[in-house]
Image (cartoon, helix red, strand yellow):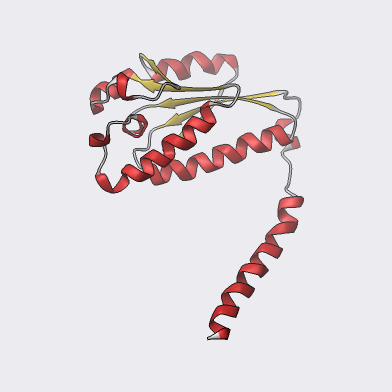
Length: 166
C-alpha cells in the first residue's frame, strides 16, 4: 500500500524538479523580436470546440506573458468567426450539453483576457447570422463587427500578424 502511494509522489516530485530549471531559464525570442516595442496580432478564431479553444487560449496567455517578460507591449485582437461565435454566446441551446461547461470556462478565460490593456474581442455578424447567435447573448466585452475578414484586412497594413486558431 505504501509503495503504491510513494511511487506517484516520487514521480510528481521528480517532474516538478525537472521543470523548475526550465521555467527559470526560459529561452527568449530576442532574434525574432529585435527592434520591436509593440507586438500586434489578430487571432483568427474559427474553432467551435471549447476544449480546443481553451488549449489555444492557454498558449495565447503564455504568449502575452512572454512578450511582457521581454519588454514588448502586446496588442491583440480576437476575431471570432465560423462556429466559434457559438462559444461566445451565453445561449446554452447553441452548443451540445456535454460541452456547455467547457464553453463557460472559455468565456471566463476570454473575459480575463479582454480585461487586459490592448485586447479587443470581435464577433463576425455574418457568422452570427449563420449560427443563430443573437447579439444580446454576447458578453459585454465582445464587439459585433460586420465582417471579421474586413477586420483582418484593415489591420494587416497596420502591422498586425494574423494567426489562425482552428
